Image (cartoon, helix red, strand yellow):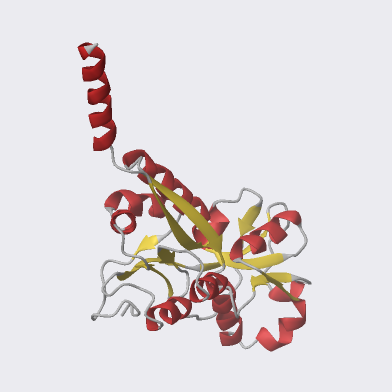
Length: 253
C-alpha cells in the first residue's frame, strides 16, 4: 500500500513540475504563410507546452481586426503603415517591436505562357487591393512611378491578399500579376518575367511586435529574431534587416 502511495506521489510531483500548456496567437501577413508555418512547427517542437495559432491575412485587414479587439499576441506585418497604426494606438508593448525582414516585387506569368516584353500584351493583371494589401500598395507605387497606373487601371484585378494574386496567375484567370519574390518562389505553376520593368516603390519591410506581454509570447517573439528562425525565412527568399537603423524601426537608411 505504501508503495502505491509513493508511486502516486511521484506521479503527482512530475505532473506538477511540467509547465502548463499555453496558447498564443500570431497575426501574420499572408505573404509569410509558408515560412511562418515552418517556423511555428520548429518552435513547437522546442517548446511543446506553447501552442501557436496563426491568423493569416492582408496586413490592413489584420490591423483592423487588432484595433477592434481581436485576440492577438504578436503582429507580424508586411506594411509599416498598418503596423504603425497599431503602434500609435498603444497596442504594442513598449520596446517590443522590430523591423525584421525585407522583400521585393516581381512580375509573374503562368508557367507555360510565353514571356512578354511589354505590359501592353496583358489583358488582365492581378495585384493586391492597394488600400488593404501591402503588396498591392507597393505594386500601385511601382506602376505609378512608371506613369502607367491610370492607363492600365481598367486591366487590373484586385485581390484580398498577395497569395490570391498567385492563385489567379496559376489558374490562368489573369495574364500576369505583381507579387513578392518570396511568393513567386513557392509556386511551380508561375514563372518570373524579369524583362518587364518595375518602377520604384517604398522599401518592403516586415515589422514584428508583441501585443500581449506574456512569457509564452515573449519566448516566441525572441525566437522569431533567432538565427534559427531567420534561416527559415531566408530559405523562402526573405532577407534580414540587420538591426534598427538610426534608432528607428521604420527606416532602412
